[in-house]
Picture (cartoon, rainbow, N blue to C red):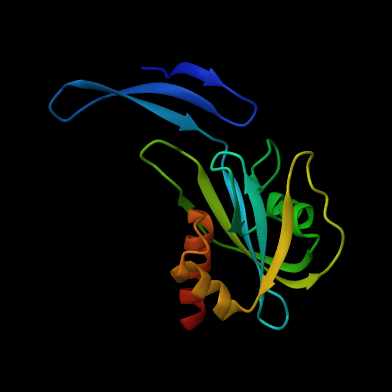
Length: 171
C-alpha cells in the first residue's frame, strides 16, 4: 500500500503507512519522513570540542548541541557536514571523516543522522540562516562529557555522538 500523505512541509512530510502484521491484521502508523541529516563533532587541536548554543522554538529553550543540519537534495552527507560546520560555527575542517549513522527516533521518524568527526580546524566567519540564534561554546572534551551527565546537554544527537566518539577513542 502506498503512503497516504497527511502533511507536506519544506523539510519533511507526515504520512500514514500501513503494514500487515504476522497475524494477518492490517495496522497503520503515522510516520515523519525526513531526508536525513548530519551531525559534526568539531575537535580543536588542543582536544577541546566546539559545541553550539542553539535556540529551539519547538522546546522554547536554548540547547547545547553539536552543529548539525538537514541533508539537501543532490548534496552528499560529507559535503553537507562541511557546509553545516562553516554555517553554524565558522570553522573549516582540514580533515573530516564519517564515523557512523543512526536513527534518532525510529518509532515515528525515518531520519537517518550521519555522524562526522572534523579536525584540523581553522576559525572563520559563520553563515547563519535567517532566524538562527546560534553561538559557539568551546569546552574541554572532559567538560563536554560531564555536561551530558549533569543534564546540561539534553539533545539526543549530541549525547549519542559525543559518547560514540568518547568510546571510539578508547579502542
